[in-house]
Amino acid sequence: MTDEPSDAPHAIIVGAGFAGQAAVDGLRKAGVQVTMIDKNLYSTFQPLLYQVATAGLNPGDVAYPVGGFATPRRARYTRGELAAVDTGGRRIKLADGRELGYDYLIIATGVAANFFGVKGAVENTFGLYSRVDATVLRDHIMNGFEWLDEDPDASKELTITVVGGGATGVELAGTLGELRTDVLRATFPSVNPDRVHIRLIEMSPALLMPFHPKLREYTRKQLVKRGVDIRLSTQIREVGPDRVIIGDGQSLRSDLTVWTGGVAAPEEAAGWGLPQGQHGRLLVGPDLRVQGSDRIFAAGDIALEPDDPSPQLAQPALQEGKHVARQIIRLLRGEQTEPFKYHDKGTMATIGRNSAVVELPRGLRITGTLAWLAWLALHLLYLLGYRNRIATLINLSWRYIAWGHGGGVIVGDEPAEPLPSGTTSA
Image (tube, rainbow, N blue to C red; front, side, top):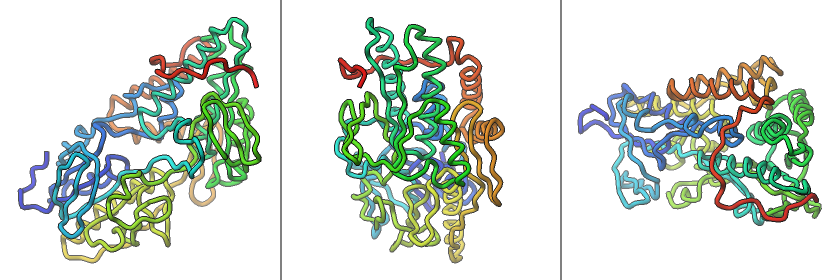
């Protein structure tokens, strides 16, 4: 808990993701009272959720108690969800009715899935934005494999569609392809892997659009090598319980449809009374103060600077969180704020075992095993908690060593809603 004087300025940080954590770190020695608010008891390391969904990591490996992070940094954690902001009275209201006063407010809630108005997408797709999402998806995937194993006629087939060809979609599709060829053969030897189909749909003309064209093509070839059916320049018109309908009207079988195709501000952001831009994100100025506000900042994916938007990635969120903390310190000293400048440290994405792409500043590009090891090392570095780092290293090492030998998957429970009955080849 904070040990600052009771009359010290009070900074509230809403959101315990990358940006919120960086802001807490930045205010640690600023002489302010800091309260961190998040609707969950834990902070989720989202870049590794696909590993939970594909049974490579336990849900606890990618989660860390928010209170355990905040307390050593002289901050106090309060569980809650932001419902409204009173800019004039400098108070916020939480969903349960509690009200808290602030001198400075940092909104770093992150974002949610953006379904772009696609009919049936909300009701009939699985997300991959929270620990619960990943656990539910894992249970359905493993149940699907078992469902095939129990089919005496071997007439049923399982089709998984991943919507969105960004980093999350590519990582999930690539790992699912490896699950089919390696784990399925070892764990369910009676199931022909050809009965499992992995499809990746992207509306853009290429995968991983922010990357160099050569890295995009490498990614495409690696996914094809893993048996993934890639459909580019393809829009989703409708999603049903057991199929997707694409832009040209074609109906494609899909027993499990996973939506990774875009993000938007959470619905509750509309009630905050703050200016919103594209996809509901909060409009900020060059110094990351919310437009029209002197004491409210936004950082991470929820923030949008219209004239110089930052990529919606972990590194920009970390840098923005640190920047916001520095600006609050400057304001406390009576100094002018400074504009935020993103320093590009590179971008990476993994495709599967021994396969990843890394793009560094000044045109340096890496693929293959070296890129994959770099990806693994960086993600271990950013995980919160030594226990999580060790557990993740052990579980991922075991996954890639044991695959094809009857191991490498973490099982869960049977889902409450199983796959549609009677699904056969189509």
